[in-house]
Amino acid sequence: MEGRFNMNVFEIKGGKRLEGVVDVGGSKNTALAILSAVVLCDGKIVLTNVPSLSDTRIKAHLLERFGAKVAIDGNRMEIDCTDIHPGEADEETVRAIRTSFYLLGPLLARTKKVELPAPGGCKIGARPVDFHLKGLRALGATVELIGGTYFAECEQLKGAEIYLDFPSAGATQHLMSTAVLAKGCTTIQNAAIEPEVTALAAFLNRMGARIEGAGTSAITITGVDHLEPIEFRVPADRMQAGTYLLAGAITGGDVTVRGILPEEQTAVVNKLREAGAEVEEGPDWVRVKVDGRLKGINVKTMPHPGFPTDMQQPMAAVLTLANGTSVVDETIYESRIGHIQELNRMGANIRSEGRSALITGVDRLRGAVVEASDLRAGAALVLAGLAARGKTSVKNIHFIDRGYESFEKTLADLGAQIERVPEDPSLAISDGNH
Figure 1 (spheres, rainbow, N blue to C red):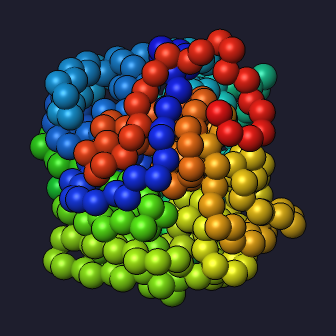
Figure 2: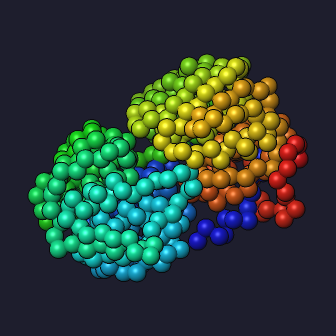
Figure 3: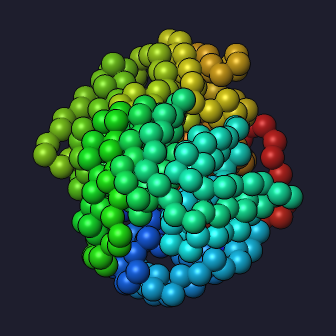
């Protein structure tokens, strides 16, 4: 399904100052969490503001393998899970996105027996599913991994007390959804407090679930017999919003992002202020303006409300041009470093030490042919290309298409010179200007 994107590259002529207003699309991570939970409802659910991304399309295709009827019209999606069945998911579709695994519990709650190949996603380090499995077993499921496929069954899921060793957003969403149809009361301690968890709980509660405490570290779910079909609008994508603010910053621009919750940008905004950017906030907008050169800062990724791991790589790109030294500590994923070598290819000065990146600011970046290794690394390379002197070609943009809807169009509307072009087979990776 992603194949049609593979042969394109983003071609960027750098040096344009970005200015203007961006209306941010629906949240990828929230949409994917909701698309795992829709199978809990025996009826038709209508989702609006669904981002038109390869990940959401793959997830819709996966739901069809389990008997869902899906109709997509732009950013509107209708999903009817009346005839949901254990189905057979093809390995290729499941491996294309990690959140396919989050269907396991909700499908089990509806069908009592599920087979699901092990998941895939961006290669940014070990993302073990132990917390998920421990939680599902606590709820009364038997789950085994045999030859790369999970086999799960249950007679009746029952409420349980679940403690997460780490506040994983994925595990919190997965187990919270699964517990909605379990008999009795479930508590999730040390739960993630990400906005995507709160949005998923709002979606489930609108359908008749009884979830309390979402957005805190202790969530209580009282099981119900069934859920009612509803229409629900997916909230704005905070990672896209953060990326466009950083795009404004790296180009010495003036960018306002609208239709968002400013409190979801607190960590990014405070770090930009610390680096010397001018930031204004309104009820549903944030504006970042940069005059002159930013200064080096230290950034450490943490679970929400800390600095988001998804913004670490784009922020590193911004800091390559800051005055002085910056240290970026990645505490969530051990392999989120695919951007470092590529940024250095563009003239950045980054040294990798374990999970830390030591960035010595340079006066300018230069265009190069670079390759995205994952979604946010791709975004980081595009930002670097916007600020670099000369032409930058970013390969592997199918990764970027997983998380940014109409990325090049949005950036072009802000004044960037960027276009999606077919890859030239002679486009080889090498250092220097192109």
